[in-house]
Image (cartoon, rainbow, N blue to C red; front, side):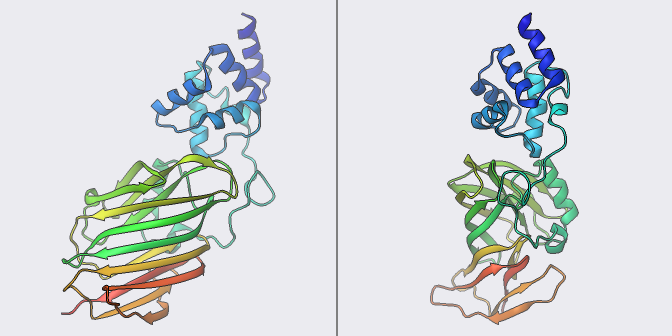
Length: 314
């Protein structure tokens, strides 16, 4: 009974970490068991994070972390919002507040680089907005796009180096919009190295696919993570360009496009532009090498689009 009275007092008076620690002790659950119970609910919160929460070294603030707190209320048989209400308002993030390096200035909204931004927002809400570029800076990216004999994009492979601006980043979201007329169910994303595939969400009318790539640990501010993944498209729709959008300033980006033998374009240009409706600038002609490929490299990227387009023989 004394343990239950202590729990009720902790839930009433707080602070959050004391209430959480008291509840865990009262229910006799280990942190590893809590992690397992959260994972059964689709929430990937590590034992390190749970330990930090109950010691007061870190507080849950990300959307998925707040979902985990609500799930903990159920797992620990606590009144609804008894833990959530002890958190109070979120602390300031980035420069001047919280623990982190601050996201880079100059960010733009998804609507600036994508014409289907409202539909993308709905997909990201289903993924709890985790691993947004606000927490992970692209230090370097190398991307190879392969064009098949049917003139379609058949595969895109990406090697990415990410740097964390804040503690607790443990995943990245990759977003792909396929060509008009495609069936998003025929798009397959695969984690190849140093990550694993999490949740995947698709929206057919806007031709969007969003997928989580999960790390093996939570990053601390300043940590880097290398991931390699690819996307296979079996739609067979003729393509005439590929471009990658950046919401935030980024480091180095190299885009390489490879063409199938006997299926070669007559003209190829690399370019950048501010958004999908903007004019091309920094445009230059590219020449195929002996391996039927071209590439474009950009450094110190500003928000916008970097792409390569080509013309097929008539």
